[in-house]
Image (cartoon, rainbow, N blue to C red; front, side):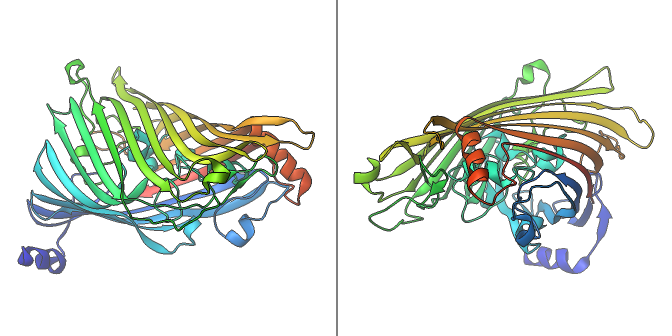
Length: 461
């Protein structure tokens, strides 16, 4: 094994792999690594408001005018491969705009592939809860599906106890899409049933977990003792079902060390996947019982989702995705003055796309649409004394893409040029809070609606 590892580093035998736009270091049939370099560049025509990306000292300032910005959103160096047929690995080293381009290990893991029905590994990995957690969003037909990247900061006020769409790993995230842990997964009957079960580091915090009725905004929960993080485990379980008897194939995420699933495979795979998931984590303890009526919060979450993609008449690639997530006991909120209640968060999302598998000009055209609805428990009393219920926003996205590369198996859906828009509107208590905030403070850029359009270029090698 040691000789093989030294050979992997020292030989430097580079050759093109069978995968499109990848480079492979290959020592033998059983020992290799696929290397990846990826860049995502945007021109953003941003609505008034503030945003959480570089330069942060400027972009986090609220503005009452439209903004023009060119930026590199992400630069990624990645590797995926195996040491033997038993041991596989992957890792992504990212330089992200909203991290000030400081390099960091975004994800990485080692897996032991004992049988298709039993694969076990550990690392910094996607938590197996919802389909959204597994999605490789660099291939998403709508570029603004990339988490909350295009979301102005006034809408993120509602997402502090749980952000279902945030990507990557950050220690201050209340709910983590990617986390440190261990996962067991397997495929049964050629993917008719797939399972994923994981345990992860449990994080406890009182930060931004109580919503105020009168002032709005999330603040820190008053506690009577410390938050003992890592005292126990978070655990997540997910089951997926593919109707293989209808001719659909399983998505290969069980056998991919990154566990990725995609909204489109560019015509290389006709798939249909039904999924359900469960998540459990105690994330707050020692809350002031006299004030909140409870001393702790244990988040229990449930997910259900469906996705498919199929090629029709040899040239029309049609796909869709629908998902629902419900998070119970994510925070406290002030129902009436000095009376608190446990709050929940729920969301659903939908996506549909069409890609035309015949070349027009320099590429293959495609169009995608996406919708998100987010509802967070929370009451807000406006300046007239009226109480509004629920922090709600809706989000609409559309993107027209041109894919210039096609391989033997299908269209390369990572390399592309896209133009699209993202529209968000606040409702109910969130809308009232945003409007009052703009009137009371210097945040004149706070607006309950937001329209951003963009031009994006993704390149992957």
